[in-house]
Image 1 (cartoon, helix red, strand yellow):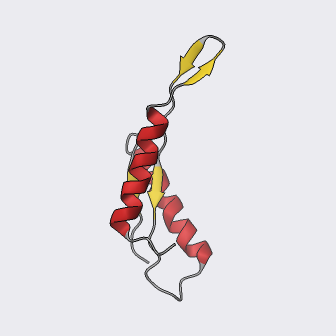
Image 2: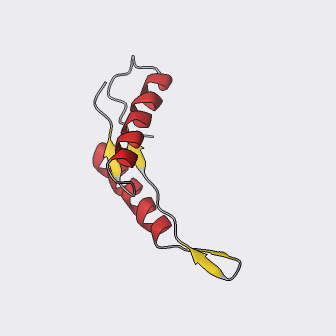
Length: 77
């Protein structure tokens, strides 16, 4: 809450890197995983939460389709 786009992007990227840099031990091996994020900013107070989440979801799938392990910004409402 009360986070601007630049800070939200920085947080998402920090999480993305932390996940990628933290292999998961499994049966004597290390499994590396990646994460993609979609970031949406709530600009319009009349936009519902569902619409905000949908925009973030579209950005998430754009990140996955763009090569994964990325952060994408949702289009403004």
